[in-house]
Image (cartoon, rainbow, N blue to C red; front, side, top):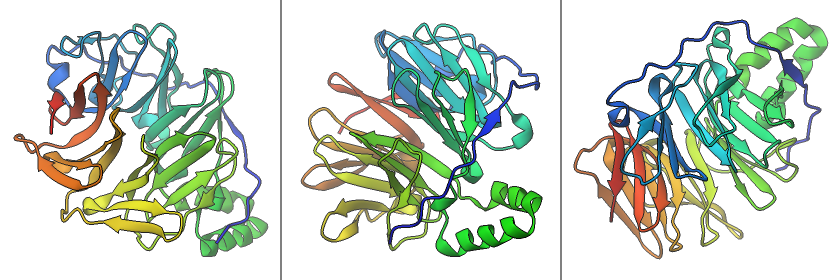
Length: 325
């Protein structure tokens, strides 16, 4: 059922006054918790705990960069030579030189809310999402970020509750809004469509660059950590306790049998048309015409991965690893 689209409030995120601590340059940063990885114009970038940012031109030798924050970084996105990373303390940092130097665009530790993902549609227009409905937009490359609440992503009862509350008490409405929205975990793009995955069974799609969203109905109420269209045009959603779903035009979301209980963190489309889904405890799902489950020898969480040539480079709780079927 389609939900009504509500007018979004745009709250300008002003210049931060909080003092940030630069990331410590650690000799074993490539063996620390890393949470996201992406291809750059010069090679590969990985981000993770304590503000660690690593660059590599060959996927084997990694150099840690000087970063102005020590907040854990959860996601990174690339547009040409420009790169953005987000993370805890609602931090957003940016680079205009392929990740060699970084500047703070937003830093709000007082919120006590992490940003979980960032997606740029071009070099100017970007979105950042996170806990308790954090949703920021920029149209100038991050010089300014505006906050949008997107209450249309709530269920109908919560929407009605907020509408009634707003009429009675505007200040209480603002306070409730900051805690009632679900966590937003992942954004992805397929053509002109944006997808969003979050907690409490939240899957949603947008046809207007994320300015309004339509929830996608699904008979599951656990958290989702990724939603993505694959190179062979399958739409998948992955989440808590091994739950993996595929969207069918005729039948809606149908669960795929993984027979596992470890949470699935990311969906990774591969160049050969196959798909890799990575999860906790070292679990990997290789998906093509069949579904094959594998576990790494280390049995450590795999957070995301990137195909590079004939290799798959993964970021894990113990650093950089190569994956193979």
